[in-house]
Image (cartoon, rainbow, N blue to C red; front, side):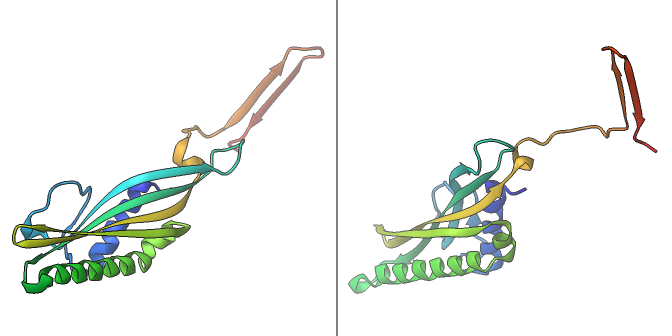
Length: 180
């Protein structure tokens, strides 16, 4: 039984195990402001989850796509001729490549999903005082199967016997002991 939260944890572990430029600065959920001392860093969260039913009737079964959003952030001091901006951009793209490789090569993650339909990235940069802040926002789609065990676990007692008495004509009685 796999859930989107499980996949988020697996993505975080894959990035931490890969020894990227972010090191141990992989945060989940990642929605708080950055401190200069915490970069380079990766912030993760579940962005969306889309379920598509596999059948109109019968047991619930879905193909689910969870989108994990990763915010990659690096800083570089301002230098002459926009050298700081260039350094920040190069560093954030290098970090993105490390994240790509970590996710694609993570056996625990790839064995829990059906496949990775897409990975999208968008780049932005801004000057923040004497620092250039380069950011890549990655959306990683992970497709996986969800079956009845994900939605309706039913607690049941073991069946140890059947007693049936039919009162119609002619009357019938049936007793079966299943424990023998």
